[in-house]
Image (tube, rainbow, N blue to C red; front, top):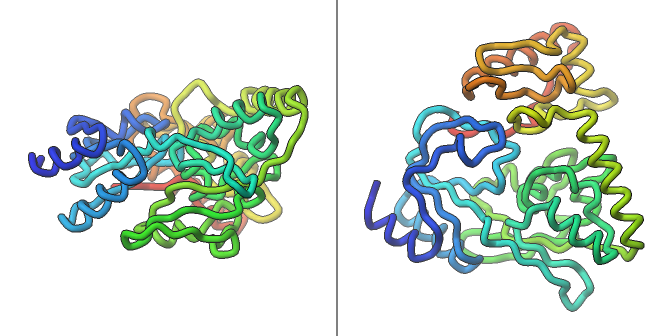
Length: 299
């Protein structure tokens, strides 16, 4: 731990030098983090990123950690959480401006109460707006690419608005996945007016379906593999005999086989062994190369 670095970070955000990935990811695994900082605002984030680059300190920006599996070894860099970047408002064009740290389910419910429709599909996705843009997250045949009009990005120390046509959106992909040095700061989305009771009923129905079909009683990183074209990852995993499979502390969900659970002190190494075995068996059985939707970090 470098005291100068801690002092700098502390002047721009909330800092911890005793955090673990296990504590900040939904799958509850991962090793120690040298520096964890939550910038006070967007300007402070910009200064922190500039400092880390100047000091040649690795860094990783995370939202809620709901789509990550992190290794057990200590991470000597800085993890930046955007929990204080949680503002949103309508701009002059009538679009909704949302900072990257806003939790999608919370905003979906606020919008529903105000009769604003757009984020219903994301009401059950436990992530931040920045993370959803990064993954082009979606559900129920809708995704972020259907509503996002532009994204505010930090690139080489400058803040730049990128239009939707520049974002490289595809199925669970965006341009940001090939530019890890870019930082998503905020986005704008299109919204429509609707009756609050209609939006609330839709959200309630989708949350009911989620509880009925997804294993929410044990830690996970959400859906593990992307659905291949014309099929479902869970079906291929199930047909390959992995429903309920256990390896050390890792379990393939019996409820939804595309959810890989941390059932009992599982590690990233256990997770990777399990997912690699699944990939091999599915390739052998169906000739399909499953692609990970979950991000592996520091593994």
